[in-house]
Length: 132
Image (cartoon, rainbow, N blue to C red; front, side, top):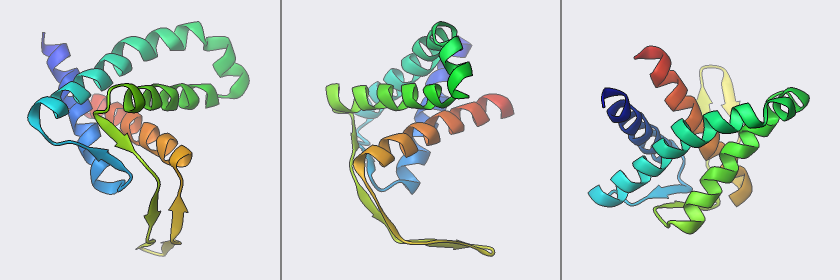
């Protein structure tokens, strides 16, 4: 029970943090909608992803892990289109300056935003699992 609760909390945190920095990743913050989205992401990340890693292991070796990123994006695309809890759209990034690094302004289209959102959610969940 403790592990299931942690999965939902980590997924909710990842969704929330992704929606803060990614203006094209829009989620309804109604309690039940947010809970459903967190449950779907937790279900996908903790049930579908591990089985897909086993099934697609040879393909991941051949593509050096690129297939996993594509699979994450496909799952996020499926959830955003079929359930309507998460909306992913294109957006304009106005640029950022951090220390001596400058990220130029750019228009991020729909497809790139799906990959960015999937990468962000999986990275945040992985970091939370390693920390806690």
